[in-house]
Image 1 (cartoon, rainbow, N blue to C red):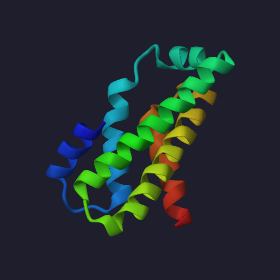
Image 2: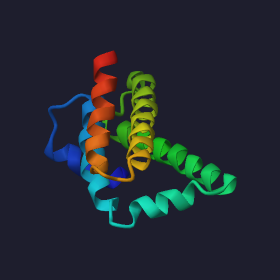
Image 3: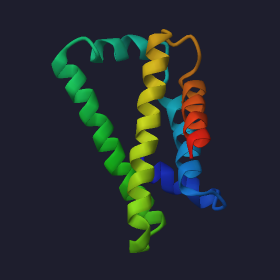
Length: 124
């Protein structure tokens, strides 16, 4: 994720942190959404151990995202807002995935992610 985010940012330097993350995640989710994605996601929800592991993956993604943001905006004073951006963005991703799973993947995950970020934007 870090390398992808950095490459995407290099080509698109005129956006703010949350918008940068939204754009990057929208590009990345299409790579991971396949015919079997809903089935795999349901399997990962099937036991407590797998649910716990999936939650750990979200934490790892948040940490990776925070590290990537820190590379792009290395000023120490930016770290608190970058950390918050990473946390909120991964929360938006989790909510999008929950809605996508609930609807059996009837719409693309990217659509749910756009909706999730729109809700976030409306609250800021």
